[in-house]
Length: 318
Image (cartoon, rainbow, N blue to C red):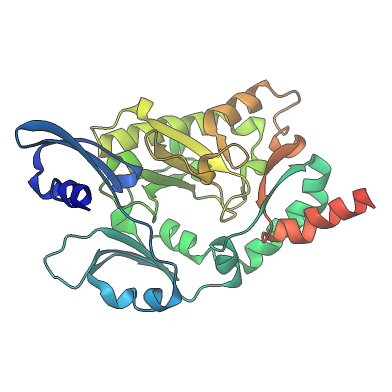
């Protein structure tokens, strides 16, 4: 007991010298200082959120200094402080989806995952029709709000008119709604193309290589111009497959951003790798990513698993 008390008494004696490191998007810090004139290193990490319903039901009531960062269609994002004091600096990033859909609920719920291999035939006969249906039913209004100048215009970092003004090559670059806009090592930007006929990386062809190279060059230039302390060699560019929404976009993240499942093999496809694959692919200008097999991760609650790959698996095993 005495040892425990003596240990607890050390923390208030800590005198800060300097910040050594900050990672996990600012959720963990390493501080160098001293205690009783002896060097000391203190690391701090935010504790996990409680999981009991009673505590969580009062969670929103414990927030203060809620500051709206932006609103687009059903999506809202904020900074807020945990605690009732008006002097507390923002220490939480909040995203609100209202009204949310069943797809949103599935996306954010825990679920098992599967590795699937999508052949060109499976894509043509099953996945492409599924994507078409999702685009008809899916919430893409927020994307078109940005592209058409109705929302988030002050947040746009760069708008590219396309090479020589080619409208089908135009795109915008803006912060991802999950980034707090402050912590550069957790930077996350989105480049969204203006044309609406390219739904995912599956629609990319050899004829798009010059355009993709142009986008890569302009994205990197715009990002480091906006954030000069970040170098081009500190940024990763990739596309998701399957993506969250079916309108071609490129993720731009800092290399120090903590790797999560969204950056893992089976989800993220590097832009440079895609360009190289298209360049070296056999065939004419219309040959493309629709002609290759792709292996990737699917959640068991994803419609493609329940409606396409699980039934296909059952047939092959039967």
